[in-house]
Length: 270
Figure 1 (cartoon, rainbow, N blue to C red):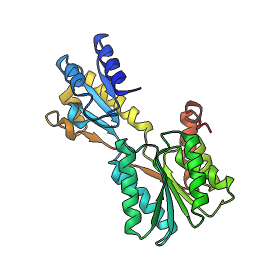
Figure 2 (figure 1 turned 60 degrees about the horizontal axis):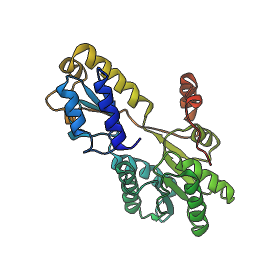
Figure 3 (figure 1 turned 90 degrees about the vertical axis):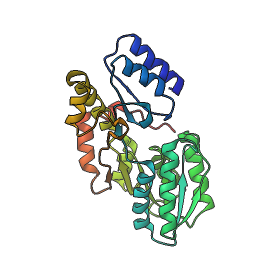
Figure 4 (figure 1 turned 135 degrees about the vertical axis):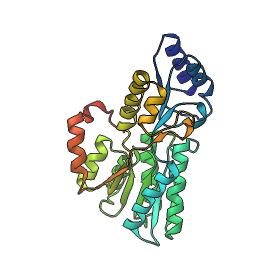
């Protein structure tokens, strides 16, 4: 859904008598007016996944700063490949703040460890194109021993590219998210590490916060969370990222099966 459509939908929900609103801040400056309209009507607003801290939203539930997330995964890669290695990097967008921040953090860590980075052009958030780019990167850089991508589909397409080119076991893949295919690739060892930012809980805790805001009132609900109604831009809750490997992915698999996540998640189509 584009930003304009999001705002239109939020206004429609306000006109329909919504008690509260939650939104994803896909562009930080786009939601100020509609959030102000909601607050004028006494409707609490929460952001999740992506933040718009200047919008007047009461709190945000989501990931750590993208740059820091990229650095986190960069340190994991550096430990796997060591200084002097070559690492291949992919992204799905050159404009999305999350993608830009993750890539920048990762690349900065590589530079600090003396690791050469070869970057592909943006794949435009197209997994099929991303796979083609991954294969081209591998063919052009046979010396590479690591691959990283900022989007959740990147570990999947990279593992497929490595297998297609007969490079199994020679390229360490690290990335983000735990899509069903990524879980399987971690179990097989095709993906070395993937960091789960616990996005499941972005919606879960946002919904819990909305319930309390409506039932208890804004000040009480925020105080309950150690937050300040007078400084809403600072009200942030970040679930702790967790990195899984072949040795630890079983714990996620058990939790995921209990939640039936695989049945509720669209497969990465290639």
